[in-house]
Image 1 (cartoon, rainbow, N blue to C red):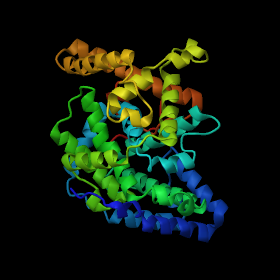
Image 2: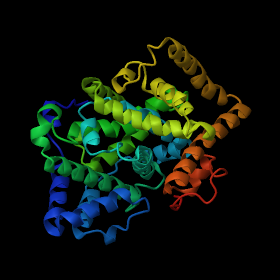
Image 3: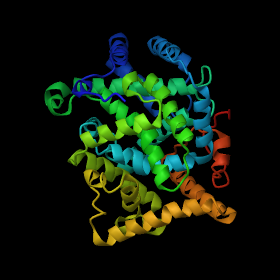
Image 4: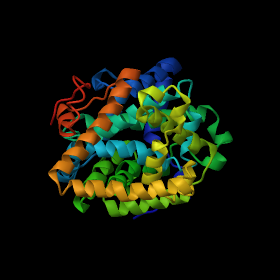
Length: 399
């Protein structure tokens, strides 16, 4: 597996950066910014043909470059998501994102752009998590990479959003203020780490929970994100197409870049506080007792692990009380899922409780912030959360 050298923290995505600059030059600052807001805040499927000609041409050229050599792997990954995507969804929030927030140079852009921090943190976190999770759904759902289907544009859209983020930072004098320490914003190495967080890190998380992910499933999931990575503008030599190479590269970058700072702790705290609101009984949400609910910290600490937790401000492995709690979780959680595969009654109980958790998150975001995922009805059915969510979601046709 190729390992990126220091120079790859100076490389970005010249083609996407050129596109965004072209949008500013052609339409002016106000309209170009509005295009960005429409891209990032639209949860319904975007009418691609209604976009500016420059974006349409960029998307078509981006899609035309993709050669899917192993469609059977994408189909296998989508089948896995169809049945276990609720687990992947939870791990995305409680492991994948917090774990890569240990990357002190990568999180600087998120912090400076106010990605999770603002006047109403919970609302901002809800929207950002919705955007990230919707992208995950768009890539992993059945049929996403069939001919001319939406998975191609979902990745291209994120590529353009990354280019906008770089322009925002460069226009705010990033190269003088931050580049000497943090290198270029949303650089190739940072994009690679994020890509692998969606695949390798997520697989590691659901395995730690006790769910079975075969080697074939793992390779298929990484291959799916390899195709997404090509669309995102990640260089092929740092875009693994199998789990073994992806795991090696993910942990190389993660270990090289881990460092505790104000920025990564603040971003993780924002997610923890949002999760605390969801996981606290309604009668304590608006009381001081809410802060005593440490379930989010315990769950994130367990899934992220003892080595990385301190780099995101979580020292629960060194606390006498919580060290024993985490040992209990380590014993209970995997065995719960392992035993559920041996007993139909246990399987039903575990599945139903998982469905309730995910349905609770979906319902909370819908009720509090009036936002719903665009998701296939068949996924809601197979995740068994459709009985808790009536008439939910901006539905896309099932494949």
